[in-house]
Image (cartoon, rainbow, N blue to C red; front, side, top):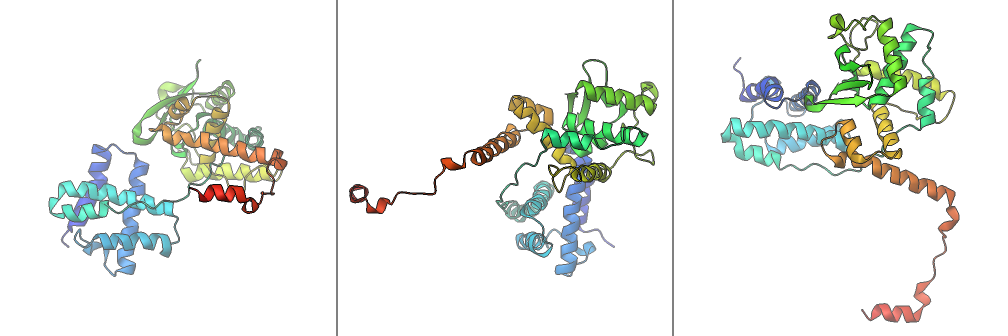
Length: 337
């Protein structure tokens, strides 16, 4: 069967342009791939067009708008997810307009489709007591428990994204003072994160126990591995955290009902900010490109303080409001404008 122009350019976009030219991460490519897979699913189920027959000419602004509505209404996805799918489409059609100028007008109409505004969720993070309770759950008398404690401690102490933690290799750990872990973030950018003394001790013990301290032979090995001796997946790390969060929740109500590894990253950032660390340093610590992204922690902390003040001083806000309508002098003054 003859290859369509859509298949040709999509394959080149994902296999060559994104990894070789844009140097984006594997996770970004997978996320974009899922967006195009859903587009093909929409074409098949809603438009009765099989994947091998989809062409660039068929992908009009109208069809893309219908696809986005299908994602949000038909599949029940959030506005945030809809915007992520649109961002993936924008990236592809921005590429196509240079590779195939005959579709320039069609591409630009798709690129003009705006992102929907939506309320950003509040930053979920743990209190120091909640964090300590979770870290107290692994059984330190077993090898598996010690591994899990070390993994969770590194996750918090580095403020790593879950994929950054999963990708850690032995070569990325330096335990002599000052102890540092090197993380590879978005865009394959490296950043070097100092770790606390207690985390350094945990790591040193863990690496010796698992024979990872012979660095010349183990440099390329994953730092954390599962029972199959393979590096952890994101789902595997999330499972470990949820398991211990469930155990901690039975002991105290301060543990949130739902908890993801990214909450540990938010928790580290909030603890740094509340300790007086400047936002510009937190930005570099987390690997943010723009300090506006980091500013969410300042806003979240301000809102949290406001709510606590309202609880402490409820009598400061009276429900009584003066009846200004009965003040003829005030009404006359207002009417004079």
